[in-house]
Length: 342
Image 1: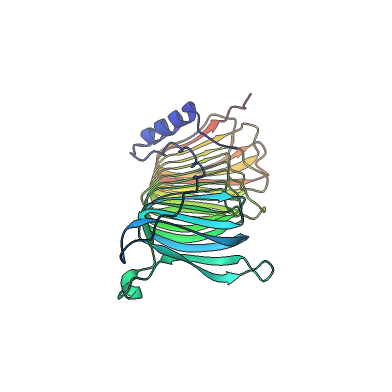
Image 2 (image 1 turned 90 degrees about the vertical axis):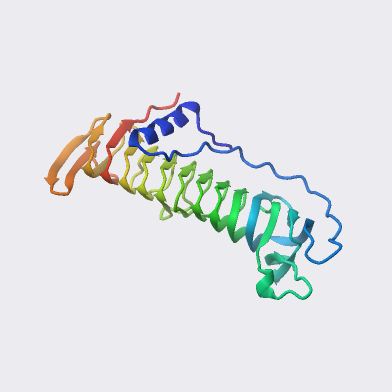
């Protein structure tokens, strides 16, 4: 199933960011990558170190682990039904695939490492261990676990089991990741959709959008953090959520679940919660310079003014089923009504 933001939702995001007074607004979700058509491997370079097109394949387990790094390029990874890993680099350095471990049952590769090919007279330190190319495409089994990092790479991953990655510069798009995500974009945006498990998303200077994500187990955590950027969470099924931004707005759209613990915090930005009015949670709102208002029925339990700001505790419904903490040093806190879909 594909998830896309409607025009009204994107308008809400833009207005929300503009109202908070910041330039950062969540990017429009991109069209998911289409599984690439396999290409025929090109002729090997005629002299060491020549830039060329290279394609390699290796028979692999469905649960294969793949590790590599990428120095630059556009990276596209797609899951497929074959017991095979295929890697294609266009206009890049020649590389090899090392099988680090094989399955004792099938004999297929269960752990592989993609790394540049040695060049005559070049030391390993000078060669480096990172792939590079104009475009790097990988097809891997759906059950694959990926562990990689990159320097400058626009990255998209679709339909694999588990992903752990860190990109210094470049946007990251992750779809249909079934077994958990740990993703860091130091200078770039992060978009995650239709995925499950423990999810940890971190950006230094970028926006983060997560929608259609859910836990595999009740205890699974959704943790989202950006130093300078906005955060939007939509249709999230996790009962434990931590969302933090130092400079940026936070928006949550969806229902609060029984037993849920939700923490939303920004030092400089607005917080907006779109929730059904028939929810049942206790909300603790703390702000320095700003305001707190609700467009759904809430009962104020306590309201305290301190030298550092104001603290409000309110109930949605009886307030018994979950706890929500909303904190901003400078910005408004708003609870808005989420209209039921027809």
